Length: 219
Image 1 (cartoon, one colour):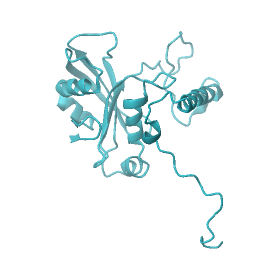
Image 2 (cartoon, helix red, strand yellow; image 1 turned 180 degrees about the vertical axis):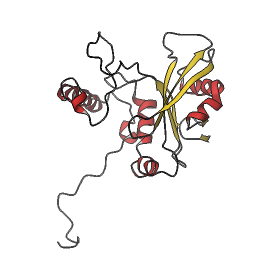
Image 3 (cartoon, one colour; image 1 turned 60 degrees about the vertical axis):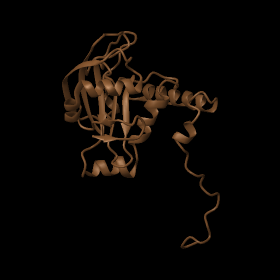
Image 4 (tube, rainbow, N blue to C red; image 1 turned 90 degrees about the vertical axis):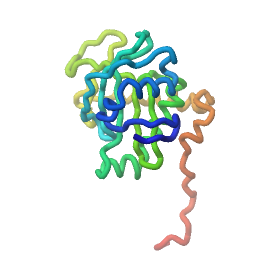
């Protein structure tokens, strides 16, 4: 376990640690994030399964039971975890590229202000000292692979990366939808409708110089 950066409590960073720390830790974490009222609790965790999907970390799903069921509480949850220590994936994703913290920051502070639906956030935290992190959200109810006809609000299958030929139209309408959503979020930023500290959360790099310095070699 490690205690860091946003909620100040110990957190698990493997599937086995989540199961070991169990309902008591989930209750504490969900109280801290505010997603679970103080008079409610997680009473059971089951069916924890780790799986491979994407390349930015390990993933697992698990099912929980609550002391009091509520329509806004999901029982099937998804968890994103760091790559195992000592691997090149962990070094590049967590250290060189720092991919993990922006995702944690987005889910804690921005998920309710962006202009599109994102999975409901339950808990997330990260340690600057170790790069360990945990991110727990609702588990998205993907449709079965190969399904072609959908009802309103139904979610299409989770298509694999770099396989645009599996998309019903080969990709254009999906990329257009993504670009429109990103453009709308950029508009929200310009209108200051996102978090007041968003520029500090996601600082932009310094602008490139208009002219190359004359002291560079071969100039």
